[in-house]
Image 1 (cartoon, rainbow, N blue to C red):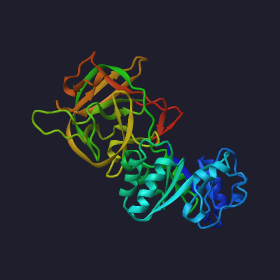
Image 2 (cartoon, one colour; image 1 turned 180 degrees about the vertical axis):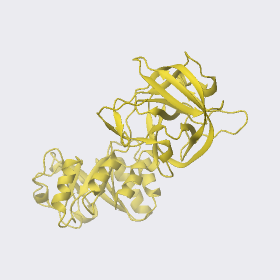
Image 3 (cartoon, helix red, strand yellow; image 1 turned 180 degrees about the horizontal axis):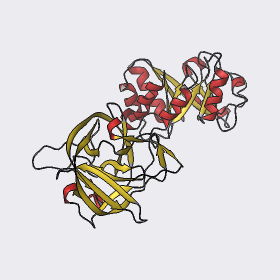
Amino acid sequence: MKLSWLDIRSLGDARDAILQEALHHRVEAVVSDDPADLKDLPPTVTKVLFPQGKPLPEDFGDVSVVIVDPARHGTTPAELAARHPDLEFGRFVEIIDAPTLEDACVSARTEKWSLLLFRDPTKIPLEIVIAAAARAEGSLITVAKDVEEAEIIFGVLEHGADGVMMAPGAVGDTAALKRAAQAEVPDLDLVELRVVDTAHVGMGERACVDTCTYFREDEGILVGSHSKGMILCVSETHPLPYMPTRPFRVNAGAVHSYTLGTDERTNYLSELKTGSKVTAVDIKGRTRLVTVGRVKIESRPLISIDAEAPDGRRVNLILQDDWHVRVLGPGGVVLNSTELKPGDTVLGYLPKEDRHVGYPIAEFCLEK
């Protein structure tokens, strides 16, 4: 999980409310330039002292981590660690040119904590530092001006920085930062479902979900007519005789169908749009969030597939009634929807909760 560092050095009247929000959402660290600001924080929060532009205090108080600027403070993290073995020390680097970028790379490879401020809007320097620190044991914390930038920082080079330090502008920003830090979705326990019936159900609107990502051959998205059962629909990564592969696309199902998005929430295929997030899932249940680039909704003939879980639960999926629309079976076997028959096995997922406006909730809900 990514780290959220809350910078309280410049907060005004909303400081107390923002701190309470931070504690409620369990940010990993609070950053100040005065040890007195950190003394009353609970032990669940890492207390970070960052006296940027100020001298180091004689007494560090209850501080856990100290970030120093060797050029300003005249000492290195290693020298301070030798004098204060009970504290952790890190280094601040402001990246403005090639020499400071190299300095950041050295810090990333050698220091326990590296706090990085990139003055230019490009993320290429951050990519270089992340690559330089690929085998290092220390942590990279990057300064972000807002939550939108934090989301980008968390995703750079697919790995992202280990954490973000941000000064919130208002109450609510800390909660948004924490959500961005937790954007990764948990892996899922897929089950084998036995097909019990298929039926041609006439015309209707189906959605092709085109993403900004290439899917792997054993990967797709989960789709189902009901919130408690979904089937793994494969992307168009496998060759077809009459059209080129489109490895960014999943011909997903009828517009009423559910799929998984962020925060364990379901979305109707019909409400997905450019910029939406959906959960890509492979045959082992490994997940990642992908961004929707386009959704194509068109009228097509449809086929209904009913399958049964080992515990007797029924799952339904309505797909375009065409041979080239496919789902995944055990071991990554690609199954054409029009050739499915009773007894065939497909992969699926059985959420435990019912849904209200897409969110999981424990309440009575009958879907049929």
